[in-house]
Image (cartoon, rainbow, N blue to C red; front, side):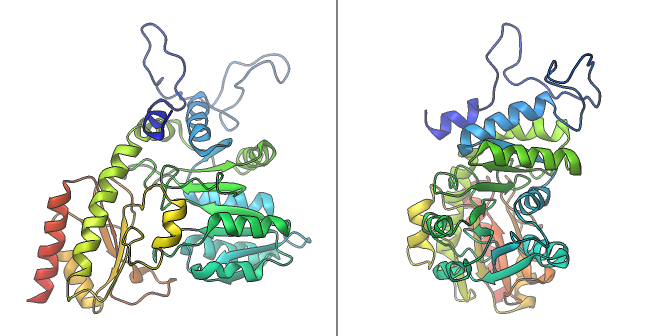
Length: 372
């Protein structure tokens, strides 16, 4: 069964006469439960929920390993760091990309570092993190990176890490599970902010982690139960419903992103363009080895803050917003947040599911507006 079919059927129970394909959300904090533990599949709302069960089964089918849902992408990040690192002990070194998602870096260098975790960083380009693996516990990878769209060789780095006894986690938010398969490429953990492309409707907060081994999934589930970062049943049900359209959404988004990138390359107002799907892009060779879709994000640089703000104001279709991967095209001047080594005129553009020609024309007229 191919992904386009699997993503529609993943996690659905067997059809039953007169019943919906996907059962509605189960709203329950308390379940009727008598007798000893093990006599009921559901006992208390912080431990489990039938709606989670179906969604996690779907994610597990797509990822290739057991999956645990969390209340947000950052909750998923926290869980992986928490179950693999031992602050103050010998397993306390994480190697991270210096150009990866700022939120993950800030968490590691703030909360975890203050409790005795050593954080080593290197750029994604050229698999530079490989030089920092000696004595490490966890290698944290992100490819393509957010927001710079640099790529690293996930299979090669996973092999190098495992030879040294180092675990590997891949933040797969940008690519999604249909765009890239980290567990198949050798990673021990594949995690995602499902608020982005996986669910793709800009209407919920959610995250997940898939693990190569059940033992790690059990540790992640125990951490979620103890720490309490549980997702709401309505959000999970919406996510499972939205998952069915992931492939068709990605196809439109990636097609539009490539056309937008091609247009940007030809415009004098644009100083640089990054999109892994462009043959001339520095990430193209590596991305082509491991990605099934190049993703919806195009990053480009205009002359400065004034030009970037003018471009965003002139867009009629793309909405100024800080997320990405949704059915709505969005764009933002990413440097307004700080934390990334990017110029003031850097724009992260996320192609939505609007008609490709409409989006391309909207970008064109917005560039025209700042050229007058």
